Length: 432
Ligand SMILES: Cc1cc2nc3c(=O)[nH]c(=O)nc-3n(C[C@H](O)[C@H](O)[C@H](O)COP(=O)(O)OP(=O)(O)OC[C@H]3O[C@@H](n4cnc5c(N)ncnc54)[C@H](O)[C@@H]3O)c2cc1C
Image (tube, rainbow, N blue to C red; front, top):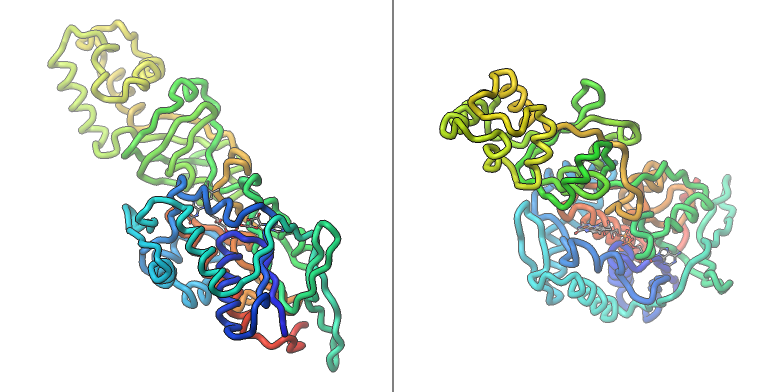
């Protein structure tokens, strides 16, 4: 009887185990073994979507692909083999009702990620997957087989940190990335891959906040700005432009706009100092904004400048805007010169900041980089270097924007790896 071991009980690993067990239907109990080093499954899944779990995105295929930042093409087979609708159907069929929210984000109706995990656990049990918790894999075990004209390296099992060797015919690495390490994603899979001869591309935090240089940013901490437009420049070159929501923190800037910027910008840029401007009134042109200011100043001619701009920004921003405007706060508005007003308009349209690099892996929603996808078969997720070794989920060099796309990658690649491993003959000697 052939045995499949899956390393890592996150979304990719759990889905791989379910798919492998389904593909081997009738093969017998304990044929699929899921190893997880934590005391429970899905520790990271539990904290996804602020505890609500944005399971996937209900957008069409084009939307799914366009939200994958790295190696979207590699995902062609995986997304078509198990698309977002199949993910939704899987959960619905297994008793978890789902709902679609703003931006086509799919959540459980209960708003509890724990229900997503409970559903997966129930299916794992139904499919007779053997789960071993608090079981940490130390290394992969490989063997060599001579076939006419070549030697094929193939997987023979795994070695646990307590020294136990578990034999297996196929091993699926679903160990996740390197972020939020307390959840168990400590990058072990990168080591396994390297030891098996794979290339692991540079890893970096992504979907992560930025540090900023200006002291006034600290004054704004806790403030969230909705409906603003952010522009990020390297010198004069515009690198990123997006409309949405941002947040000031004690160290810099975060919120959806900046998290997405961290994923969209090429790593060579995130390591540099970049300038950023925030358009606080994107719905108004400079001219329209100037007219509005003129009108307000004319309505209350004798008001001091500091008392006349409260309606334009959240209260927390007023002192900072006064400081950056260079206009005397006590100045009567009818004494403000045209030049002063125009420069104030420009400040509102381009509130300046300097981005000083990314925060670290502890705050990164995902890891950019991982096992090089060119060395993995996109139709099966099997290693092109070691026969019967598979990879799925975040351990691969794949990453996407927020919105449920990263979990879709985990489900799709997990399914494809498990299904392929479950269906494949023991050894074909097809390796190099
Ligand atoms: C705060 C936060 C919120 C997020 N929210 C969303 C969201 O709402 N929607 C979305 O699409 N994505 C979200 N993500 C991203 C998503 O969680 C990941 O993309 C996804 O969990 C990756 O799945 P995975 O199975 O590949 O890896 P993981 O979930 O990291 O699972 C890997 C598992 O492998 C285990 N493991 C590692 N090494 C070993 C070893 N040596 N032996 C045994 N077991 C091992 C780990 O303990 C872990 O349980 C979020 C991420 C974070 C951090």
